[in-house]
Image (tube, rainbow, N blue to C red; front, side, top):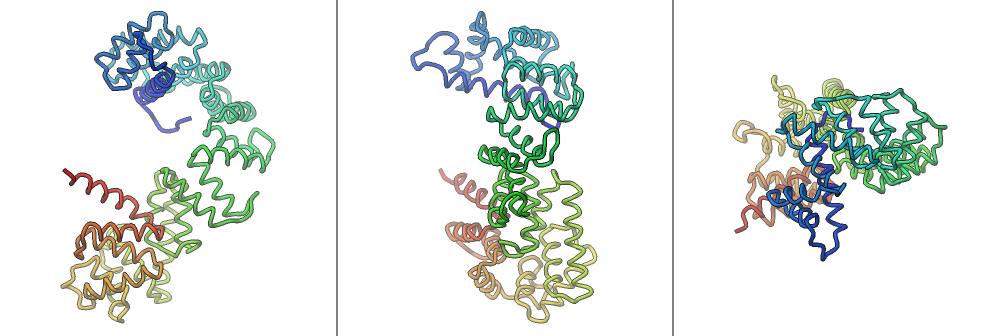
Length: 428
């Protein structure tokens, strides 16, 4: 079940589009009745013709009636009178055991901004949809039972409905059931079966399941330890916007496992993980920074000096208000360290620091390091090009971006997309 507040119109927009697309795929090519014309017009976003035809087709057509009700409810400016009429229509359809109407009605009562918000009624209609055979209704009812939302908490019943939904192909349920089986919540602990369901969810594209399976491979729990596969699964999870995927990747980059150690990427990923992971991601960031400061102060570790300055310069850990990190970087640069000298050129005004490398020296250094497989060097070289710190043609800029991407740079993936979008925008 969705944990974040979602408005009625957002729920119902998805219901409308999904049903519309399903109906369009079922229409015979030669169908030309009023219902077929309404569906085709709506698929073309022609509301002026599609909605009147759909209303006319609703007489005696259950699906058309459902679409009319859902379309109007998703309107944020709907009058109370029309909303009541549409909800009454959904109730009538639900009373005839029309599964989609039961499911939509449950979400009407569940939505935070519903004028009739009622968790008990939401759970009741999810249950009705589940018993009528609606796969997502089974999943949502299982979630209500798991959380005790609108119904008495019952982990055993929750697992039963999750299994019904999972076997019907719902990836959300496959993932939740897999976790319950791993933990023995509501069911007897069964690692092999739990992994089976999690793998099913992964095959269906569930990002949370990807992160969970990655952790199992990383730890070697119930599966052979395989950190390379764990890394790839975390990448897939993160690519789909999952915070646990970002957090899992951050650990790889911090420890230098599978990929080269890269504090910048580790910090960036931890920040990406914060919306989902919250205190855990904050703790990760805090410990990383504390360890760097400790190594810099107590052990006079030059690498830690450089990393702290780099993180501050990139804006990853806030402003370096007292200039401590910058002074650390300068002290290392004064010893002739090429990375420190190059970073001064990249991030600070060149005329203020005599220790700064020349542009040619900097480019040569980053080029050499990137050829040796250092992701951070390939990234810095690409950023120098796209920020026009060094002159490169568009093709050369793209080549540098792709080089960094080939080495596995996550930060620059969005830069490549933005670059390609800018090229398209410039095309006549």
